[in-house]
Length: 371
Image (cartoon, rainbow, N blue to C red; front, side):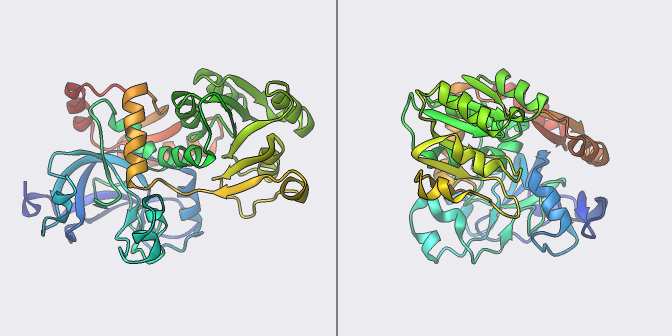
């Protein structure tokens, strides 16, 4: 099917005014494809904490802005010139959408280590954050950041993996641990945390999960953490619980997923001296008591989404080990108000997603998609 055979209009969930509810609008199907671009028919789009930041105007996105930066679907067109095809993409490919759109290709990040390419500051934008996103029937994506799905990985799992999965996977890589070492997650029972627990176990690590919600603690246990700690019993008791199972030393590394004001400090406190704390939560300020940095020599890293090769490695891990994203599906773009109500209610386990195209979900079952 060529671009001219596709519909000219589509439905999209949009931010039309900051700090106001979403609207469902009729918008143009994006057909202005650059040589590296793909046009993807969305199967599933996912909600993420960052969506609320976009809606609040944190990133200053131009309005109207189609929401959601987590999506999966099927390629229906590729940009002329053959660049996307040279990267191995063709019509009919099942893909996980890439967030970066049109990096410059020339700066130090683009030409430097492969694991830094997603940091390009001269980029046109990021899907669903500063450019139109996945809560729509079609999306324009960049083949340089989009990843083909193994047959084993479903659209339902792939949508939240596009950001949540890529973010927590890279955070685990940044911890630089060896099999058998202890990795702790602060905020282990949320959309990123339950994926992180599974990834870490698949990589042979021992896992400590810390959460402060009944739902989060339940999900952490469900997905196989070796030790689960309730943060509501206070910092001192939480640190003691971690040290009790790590020979008094603390976790070898910790990933902070919670944006609670004290979460980063707690993440450092449960980490052994000279260990690493990887910060991926995005509160306005990351607050860490100075003794953690100076007296205990905790090494702090920030981490963004995956590069291309890291994304491919993540999907390979999922196909081999059966990592799954826990999702709460809503059928149809018109269910956005129901989704938002659930997410803001604070009781959700996993990720809320919208099934945009049920036919794609049915078709992939023939391929053996099971995770």
